[in-house]
Image 1 (tube, rainbow, N blue to C red):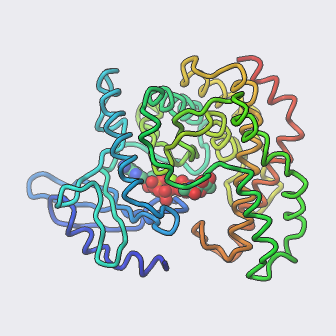
Image 2 (image 1 turned 120 degrees about the vertical axis):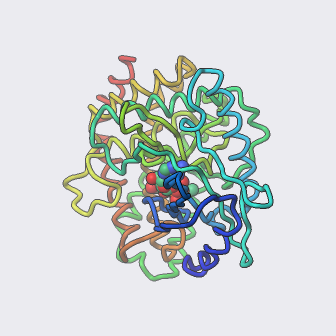
Length: 370
Ligand code: ADP
Ligand code: GN1
Ligand code: MG
């Protein structure tokens, strides 16, 4: 559905949550590619202002929004208890939903859009690019810790919110079909990128095969661990709260590791057009590996440790292939802000894959250290 149409009932949604005070601000917020996020501010006499995050779930992608919200309710209430047990602050260290007026954790508006609201986490920042290496290290500790906290979560109760989300082999098949269909007649202009995917077919199978053979364990993972999906505390610099929980599902720990590397260890942003600026920074790779292993608290197996560089390469390859698929298909999946945005994003990912190939021995050496 067109986003403007899908968001047309935002005011109706605002009226139907348990918000208090007078709405004094309502602006689009963040740089997520999937949902529509708004920052709202409410004022109360004698009590000042407070902020909330309002989101319209992308219903085309999350086709069962109620199941997404069941997962998020389950995971956030579980995390809350774990955080309390560990002496942490449950109001800041996990997302907290604000219920709708009917008590549900979401509101379905009169045109079928699904909305949810979270308390805004004050004094913290989500970064689109690493500014201070320490932040990246702290984000690794926090993502690792997130997985540790969920290690006993009843995985069978989680819905698969997007089927085959990191099934790279299935995504490779979709890619080939999309090239064949070529609905926008864009394939002829991106032959080099298409060939890059075809030449790397083995990357589409390696992790799925190891999962099937039992060499890699299935765990409750986040599955979308980019740096802007974590709030870093402005004062302590610690990774405060893992956000964007729509894809928390059983998955591979090394995919969580790898997705963070492809986004955060890059020397440029995901959509940089000057590819000479794009490379995988080995110091950042080292820092993140150290932090992630530490955050996971000894829960990674020998095989998982050994396959961490492969997780980085596969996630980067998969993401580039997804951007290219969306470009060929007419840009329906990821939000774009310029005509060839998805193609630019695809090119940075493939540049990173090539750079990782060049630096493979260094990456393996770094992991061996830990
Ligand atoms: P998307 O799925 O589209 O990526 P996110 O859930 O990641 O959406 O939210 C988009 C951005 O909104 C985040 O990157 C972050 O900057 C901000 N954000 C989301 N939830 C909160 C929150 N509870 N407090 C503060 N900022 C938030
Ligand atoms: C999307 O929602 P967001 O912007 O955090 C996508 C990820 C991609 C990422 C690429 C549900 O993440 O899988 O890796 O863009 N999320 C979904 O930046 O598809
Ligand atoms: Mg996000």
